[in-house]
Length: 188
Length: 61
Image (cartoon, rainbow over all chains, first blue to last red; front, side, top):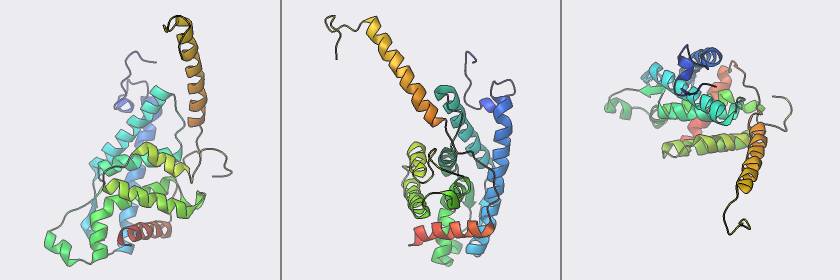
């Protein structure tokens, strides 16, 4: 182990102890989140076609969110010797950083906004929260969880927690684990 | 819980605490290291659309 552990952005520096292992994962994850954001917008086009043209992707925020996520992973690895990150943690930690660094954004005049239907306005106002939920479902496939209704309740709780600013990744991961436990399961 | 030695913690007691703590940490970390492997996947459009609709319903009621 290095004497001085450069945790923040360690996977970005070629001379870092962690570069070889984590840099490829980081790059793959960046591309993955970017692809999922694009697919999310296409899907919004099917659900709320009038709202979709007003949404766009903030690529720099994808970079920030994924970087921060990997800082968390490295901290778990270095400080707690945790190397296996359960997908509920991947989902919960990524959700946090995307909540804090919005990936799906909108820009429009207020008179245009208020001319749209309520569902469209709701979509535009909450687009990033919906993308966070979409990503959680991507990392933790609903068809593989123990109870999909319970998962919906959990996602609903996350929505509330994010909107009032109290979302916290440790409790979020623990909640998700109730429907996607680490052990004692078959398959998946 | 105090040492017999007039409430002063002995080095021996401190060492025992540290040893137990290290053992417990190993056990809990072993559990934390278990994980269901994460797989990159292709989410079906219908699955995604369904998910967005469910989330939108949470907001609209």
